[in-house]
Length: 147
Image (cartoon, rainbow, N blue to C red):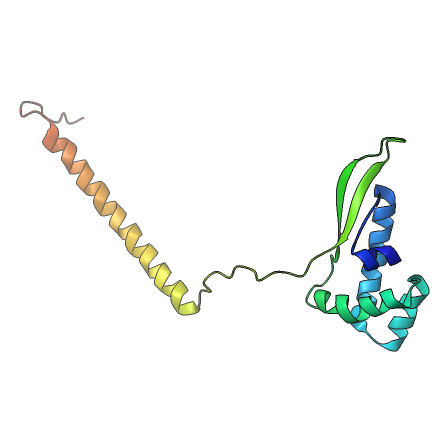
């Protein structure tokens, strides 16, 4: 537990990583709470005071906007000796400036809806024109046979 918060990444077996993930998520939730009681609860699990300080002061800000899912487990390979599945458990990085697309307001949406209606109206007219063209392309001697 201490090593995960100290180095922000740890390589261990898959079973240990899954157990560690649950405890790490609880510790980050305690850090987000931030009061003295939460700090003492974290000190009961984490062995180094410096790591608890890092968790409550530095890492807390990284996860304030998240509602959960602070830790990621990545499957790596099987260990040579016993064939155990090895995984890497990591704390998620802070979100880098996400690409923000153009936000559509109500006015933009209504304008696009109007444009879509106009296009739909224009399509039947084009079909009507294309229906007239084959008639003009028929030879003069050919006539329509009524059924």
